[in-house]
Image (cartoon, rainbow, N blue to C red; front, side):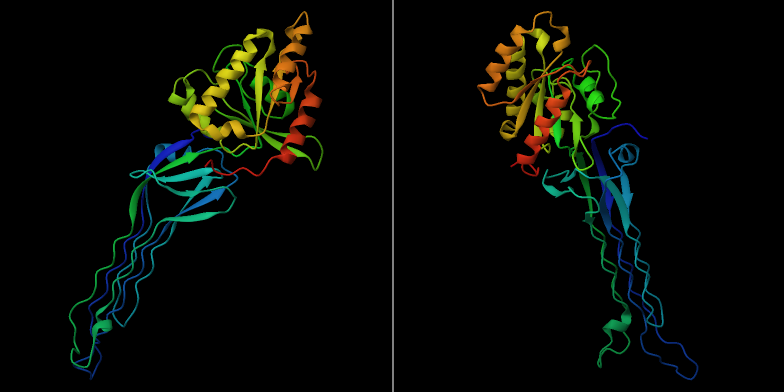
Length: 339
């Protein structure tokens, strides 16, 4: 499996239409046969198709130029040239397609199997048989095929997950993801262990499952691209619910951490702050005295957030957290592109 790549710039060129044919009937006993040049074939389209089997744009990392097949020229006996074959490129669900020159969003893939023609093939040229008239019985010309469309496009992958884990580096998001799902993210005690978003599925029962994305830790200035900022803030856009993971062992600093994260989200896109959210006060196993948890919990609850003290390492409080997230998901609307 290729490494995680969430942005790619590629060139797509649809097939050119085949040229029309200049030809005249050549039959025994028919010395002056009429025009019988056939039309050229149509050029192939370049079509993007969303696939839930793909989770990265890695395939576009090394190859950046893609061309559909040209239409074949027309032939005598009014035979039409063969149409060029369409070129189908598969992209992950969650891919946004932009015009590289204008930045305009051309398409936003949110469902498996969706398709979009990103470059249309050129029409085939007409053969000389098409131009015969009562006064022009032997036209000695045909049309060239039309060129296929071509453009540079930018592919941007925004993960589609139900819950996005957000927090500062070392808050314990990867440990939490590995605790609640079968995902196996890289875990270590230093910032930026998570260099790519990780996805995992939480299964509360046969009917109750949801997808969680562990977003790399945010730092101050992330919305400007500091650290891993812009590369991963986009993955938060489509999540239905945000779970702020805070290191409760930092005491009152936990409130400041929360404000910093909210500020970065707001700078990137203010509507992120309107998403339903809960707070996980992580690392309670490191506290010799747990009385301070109540003060923190009260401070967040006064602001309208459900709060769950947990330990991602020992599993304490995890069941209550997951049930709370499930309740939030039932109230949350289906995600869509940010306005």
